[in-house]
Amino acid sequence: MARLRRSLQGRVAVVTASTDGIGFSIAQRLAVDGAHVVVSSRKQKNVDTAVEKLKTEGLSVSGVVCHVGKKEDRERLIGNTVAEFGGFDILISNAAVNPDPGRIMNCTEAVWDKIFNVNVKSSFFLAKEAIPHMEKRGKASVIFVSSLMGYIPNYAKDVLGAYALSKTALLGLTKLMALELGPRGVRVNCICPGLIETRFGEAITKDERAIKFMKHNCPLQRNGQPEEMAGLASFLASDDSSYITGENIVAAGGLQSAL
Image (cartoon, rainbow, N blue to C red):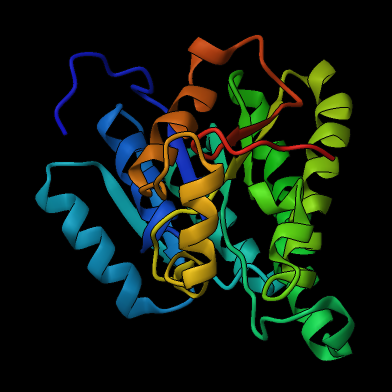
């Protein structure tokens, strides 16, 4: 993955849920583009494995265990990064759960609370807690990871009801935070992936209905790969997007989005 241009040289990035799938690909790309990346996820084993793999590629990375739904874990993630680097420049909030796929009217209160605690609440509070340590460095970029289903939850109503709604909430959060933080020099944007082939997304990407849907409705007629989200994240974190904030950018092979 050697590149000629290191657009993130000297910057420090924190990426949640970054030991697999989209998060791992984003962490890898940011490091390739010159950033030191702090990898995190809930399990020490997964963090260690991801860090080792990235270091064998000659990349500058470290790791911290963090369950974003736990305030003390978020504080440790931020605190450890600040202690080592004095702050950081890039926050990618990628963690999400969908513990009980199904229609929204079948969602229990416990499942609802877990989905919104991790997918929405923790995204907001992680960013809020990180901003004081980011803005002083001058090029702060916060990036949320939502989903195409945040725009069109009806397409996934049978398996992603409450999850899709939580991703819709991130679209609004991006707009509101960008308005408030813009005067402080902090940019806030959001990536909205389509159907991406990851372990987390297998419930949909391997479903015959989804395969048929993609064939007839997606202009590129295929699912996406995690690394195809990574370039967009690196762009939004870099100076190449220095005049972009408050945007929810869909990367879904041409699938139409509307809200």
